[in-house]
Image (cartoon, rainbow, N blue to C red):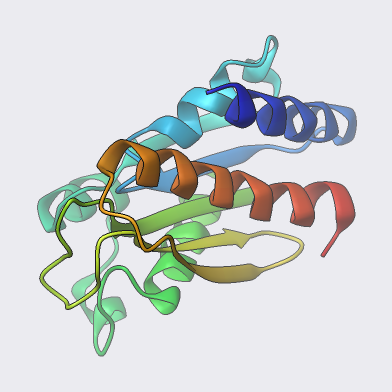
Length: 162
């Protein structure tokens, strides 16, 4: 978790310095993104909340995204990841929303994505979305890689403005 904590510390410092807030919706990273952000002392200054949106039922209960908004969209896709990130901004009144949705493994998901596939997105003053393919079936390694990719994308948006 050291790499995740290092990324989170840089992000946390930038968010605190600017008085900005973040909310997270993650899936196959299983809470590692939120854990990293919360490992930073003083995280309550910038972290508003998060959810592990692992199943369709969890999406309904934790995001309140209407079914109509999902038409023509599947989970573990860039449009869905961006929808989740935007949803966090709206629901929490956050400056930034961060999301991750994929297939950690050791097998793929029901949509035909292989193990090691995920999409991460950030929404806020800058929006970005990215697909990651690790090519690995190692569930724990994929979860860490997914969390690192999400935090790296957030760092680029928050710290660099990319």
